[in-house]
Amino acid sequence: MLSVRRFLNTIGPGTLWLVAFLVLPALVMLAYSFLTRVDLARVGPPWTLESWQRVAGYDALFQEWVGDNVRVLWRSVWVAGLSTLLCVLMGYPLAFYIARQDARRKNLLLLLLIIPFWTNFLIRVYAWILILRPFDLVPSLAATFLGMVYAFVPFFVLPVYSSVEKIDWRLLEAAEDLGASPVRAFLAGVFPQTLPGLVAGIILTFIPALGTFVVSDILGGAKTALVGNVIQNQFGQAGDWPYGSALSFLLMGVVLLGLWAYARTAGQKGLEELI
Image (cartoon, rainbow, N blue to C red):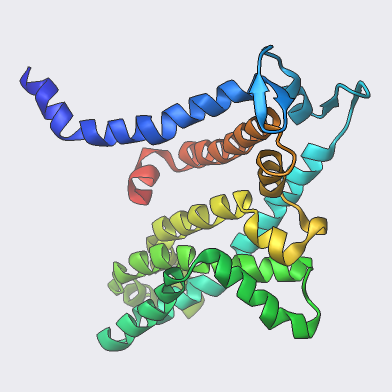
């Protein structure tokens, strides 16, 4: 009885929150994916696998296999991957620069990094239209990458900055005393200590970039439609909720597969450091 009460007082509220706002909505969406579209934004029986066949690339109307979903998913993965890489190239040295400042300047730089979160994300993306319009870059793939980096680089910098703050710089000094070059000393003494923050930043950047639809829709146009745009269209203009639900689970499966691959590679210690 005591253990049950202790569970309800500690883990219980969090468990109820996850069940109510994560597990149950996911189960409802899973059920929708097996239903049939009756009318615009209306679903009902019979239960069918038609939506999942469309996700797999089978067009029941023409009775042939098409690769539209595969192309859109591949485009989404490489756009999200390249956006994440750009965030790494920009955010990794920025995290070091912030961490090496004095306390007053460090707090100011962190504030400037966080200030964009105080404004609605949609408004910030629309602001880039005004900035890029004189250069005739909207809509374009370049504008999409620029919007992605602007939107997600803070998600990368903050966890890396947290790791840099914990670095034991004596390891760098020891490597230099043993004759290592500055580059080798950094790779051997500093870089491994930033890996937890680096991996966390990559995950926090790649996952939202993979599922976003606002940036690509506003700055990229129809030519850079990603899987998030397709899902948003199914729940919006198309009104095909079963197909949109099936696509959502496909995207969720890709994300979970990536996290599973990281868990297998990093092992339990890597997961604990990431958390």
